[in-house]
Length: 100
Image 1 (cartoon, one colour):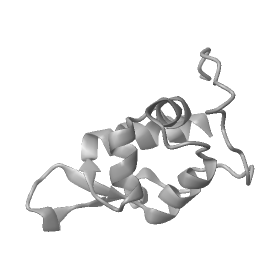
Image 2 (image 1 turned 90 degrees about the vertical axis):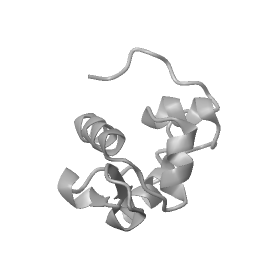
Image 3 (image 1 turned 60 degrees about the vertical axis):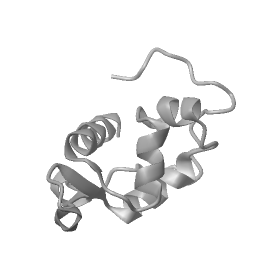
């Protein structure tokens, strides 16, 4: 179901390529971060992160939240190739899957 909240002009979706972001199974987009020594962390597929980067008009907290429904801290970790909590990754990918 689409959000009833209007997107701001600054943060509107940057549908530059008009292709859906989501083209993978959730299990393939998340890689456990076993090397960190902390359980419960996972990496998001770098190809998906790159497609997300192309859709993002500004890397502000408001824009990231409006566009993807995640915090700017989570976005920065994903963008920089760092692991995020697996529960956050799963919720985000399920939301992304439902929107496409």
